Every structure is written in C-alpha cells, then in structure tokens.
Amino acid sequence: MAHEHKIRSVQPGSIAWEMGIKPGDRLLSVDGQEIEDVFDYRYYIEEEEILLLIEKPDGEQWELEIEKEIYEDLGLEFEQGLMDEYRSCRNKCIFCFIDQMPPGMRDTLYFKDDDSRLSFLQGNYVTLTNMSEHDIRRIIRFHLEPINISFQTMNPKLRCRMLHNRFAGEALKKVDMLYEAGIEMNGQIVLCKGFNDGEELDRSIRELTRYLPFLRSVSVVPVGLTRFREGLEPLEPFTGEEARKVLELIHGWQERLYPEHGLHFIHASDEWYILAGEELPEEESYDGYLQLENGVGMLRLLLNEFAEALDEEKGDQEERRLSLATGLLAAPYLERMAEQLREKFPRTEVMVCPVKNEFFGEQITVSGLITGQDLVKQLSGKDLAERLLLPCNMLRAEEDVFLDDFTVSQVESALQVPLNIVKSSGQDLLDAILARNPDAERP
Image (cartoon, rainbow, N blue to C red; front, side):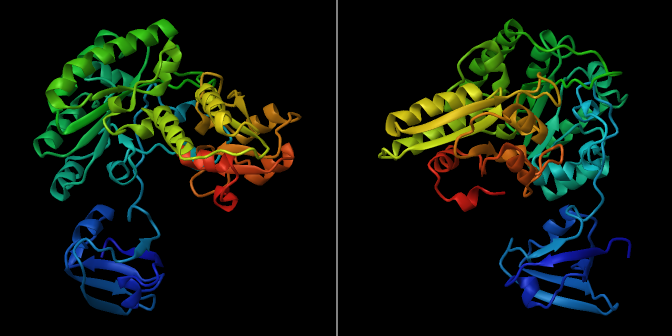
C-alpha cells in the first residue's frame, strides 16, 4: 500500500489509546480508503462508525471497529504532521522574505511552503500556483475552509512578473472554482512600490470584491525589505506620504463596501498607520480581526485588551522595576500602555526598550523578527531593572530559541537579568508586568 502513516504518539485516555494503538504502529486505511494525507484522515474519521486498519511493527494487522461521537477525534498524532511531505514553493516572488535571508542559518528557515493544507490547518497563505486541479477538487469535496490566498494583484501579466512564474496569472482561475463551490477564503496583497500599488491596487480591490461574501477579507501589507537583497529585483520602502495614499484608497473602498456587505473587506496592516502617522482604527473596523496574523489590528487588540484588563484592577503601591524589549513598530504603543499603568500602579516602572533590527536591516520593525544577538548587542550594559519582558513571538513556537539560534538562557546570561516570555494578549502583558504566574511566562 502506497501510503502508510507511522503513529508518533497516542493521547492517553483517547479512543485510540483504549483500542490498544501504540506509537510506532502504522495506519493503513480508514473504512477501506487509503489515506493520502491529513485532509483524507480528518474527513473519514468524522463519522460515528469507522473501521481502522492498523499494522503493528511486527507486521500483524488489526481491524478495529470504532463507534464514537461524530467529529470526535481519535487521539492520534503522526510522525509527519501533514501525513505527507510538505510541498515547497517553486516561485521566485520579488517580495519573498526567504530569498532575503542571510546565509548560514538553520535549514528550516530557507524552506518555502506553498501548501494548501497548511493554509487550512495553520492559516498560511498560498499563491495557488503550486496547487493542482486535484488539490482544488479535494478542498471542494471536503469543504475545507478557510483557504488563505496570496493574491498580490489581479492583473494576470503583472502577477506572472511579480511571482516569476508564467502560470501565476492562469492560477487565479482557481479562485473562481473555490468561489463557485462556496469555499470561504481570505486574501493578502504584499504591496510593492511601483508594481502593484496605486491604480493596480485599486483594480485588484475592485476585482476581488466579485468574490464576496466567500472572500471575507483581504489584507494589504507593505513588502518587508531586509539588507540581504543583492541580486534581487530592486524595491524601495514606502514613504509616509505614500502610506497615507494607500490608506486613503483602502478607507474609500471600506466606506463603499460596508453598507452593502456588512464587512469592511479590505484592510491595511498596522505598519501603514504608523508610517503615515495616523491613529489606528477602532475595533469595529477589523470585522472581528479576520486578518490578525497578518498584522491587521494586532496593536488595536493589544491596546484594548490591556485597557480592559487594567480597568479590572484596583491598583497598589507596590514598587516594581522592569524593562520590556520590543521592535520599533510596537514601542510607542507599549509606552502608551506603561503610562496608563502608572495611574493605578504609580510605583511600577516599565522601561520600554525599542530594539533596532540590525540583523535583517532597520526596515524590519516587527518584534517577531528580532534576534537574540540584537538583544544582547543593544541591551548589554543598560539598566534593565529586576527583569526583562520579551514577547513570545520572538521565539520559535514551543521552544526557547530565537531566529538566530540564540537561546533564552544565552541571552539571559549575557544580559545578566532574568527573562520573562510574555504571551500575546493584553491580559498576559499586564499579568507579566505585575509578576503574576511567573512559571507560565517561561517558554
């Protein structure tokens, strides 16, 4: 049988655990159907009655009849998260961040994914150029949604140029198939000056509105430019005036679309407002934060959550001194939150330490791309008070390692200050400042 999926772990107390399935066993089929990948697996195990074919390490095969609640999980994890090889991207997009990485970093950072399964499972954005008709039919058959799509432009010729793929324009027809099948989608436009901005952006937004209501949101984010662009298409950063024009165009479309569809649909990432020197929109403009992972509304949500958490506090006179490191993007807003905090906690001093991204280049201002070496270089010798708070997005998921493979322990040792890793919500930030649940603040 072509597809045999080795089981990595079995959740204690789960159905699989009760049936005697063990790590190292292999799943051969569900209801007689060969499982191609995680899409097939999730689809077939939804039923109330299923038949598993399991192969033990010694070659013995077990047929297991299982009765369960509909949609109830079996409690299995497989050695390959997708139950298949990850599919890499064959495009050479002019804005690709991975092509702007320095040499000598760990191999996983150079892997370009363009896998529709990761779009469904993890929210990754896909260009559709690496998807076959078979992939689209499976998404429709299993009704897997939302699918997140990297549009960049609706001009087919321009899309071919920006993605360096002669099929990139033709790939947009797959959006029609998803739309006709009623598959929910979200979109993204990475804006590159002189390419897909101005009239091209206006055209793209106009054409994308045809996919409402199934295309629920589209974010516009400025291209991230590192200092490692030698040999790549020349690109320039946007100016403050250009950012204001981008916002004017987006806000104009929001005003037209919201009365008819009840959605603002097209959204600007937080960077545009900071670059333009404009105040962030209120929460209602973000349609429930559909594009949060793209940096759309992230700062507004943090501000609101922190204010709400602070409202619940009575305050105290306890003396606290701590520092907080972040990227240049969020620093002014964290300063604002520190000022609000002092109204109720007058003896709590939070020193916000903006960190320039010298590793990737100063055009990169988000905290999630700050490296351990930049922290050490820029904060060494400074009075960091009793402890230093760092946002969890500086680290790899579930690990204590920065992008440059510096560990939390190494940074802690170099700076001679205890580090607290803070989760992403405003409540988490307040709890960390007030030194609540310190064990939960370690990675």
